Amino acid sequence: MSKTNNFVFWGLYIVAWVIFVGLSIEAGGLIVNFFFSLYKPEFVQNLYQTLDLTKMYKDSKLAFFGIYSLILITSILKAYLFYIVIRLMHKMDLTKPFNTFVTRQISQISYYTLSIGLLSYIARELAKDLMHYGFATDNLNQFWADSQAFILMGAVIYIIATIFKKGVDIQNENDLTV
Image (cartoon, rainbow, N blue to C red; front, side, top):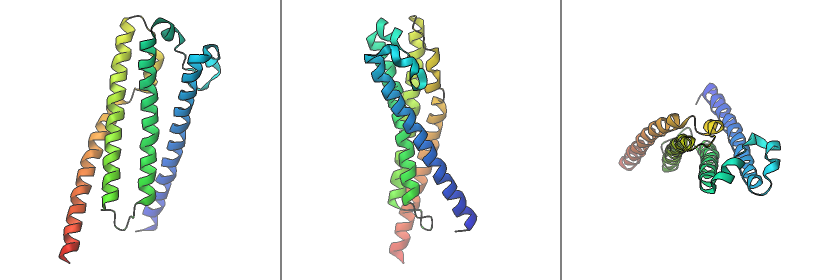
């Protein structure tokens, strides 16, 4: 493998770590925000993201817990997705990339990416529906604005995982032949 490819790979590895840390901080901040929303709602303005849904909580606890659950699940899944990417990049052998570990990790990445996209889409549609009932959900679009991109990305990654699985099968067959 050339030095340029190795340099790019390590650069992407560092970028994946930075994204993972950022998404973990966001998920942790949202979890803290959630608990403060329940127990000390007047303090929410001072927190990270300032996600204040106290009016929704007073009007409908079901809507509050439903929306907040979807926000928390998608943010935690995004952080975990990049944890899987980091684990893949850390253990992957670039001289022999077609192995069962890589195939499993890429498949997991596709499943989590598709799950994030579908949950985000459901949350976006639920927020639109709640707007018809008088709930203010305009400030929530930032959490699921990229749902279609995640769905498409999940489908593309699934195709790549299928190609890798076929590559592993061919490589194992080739190793048995030799």
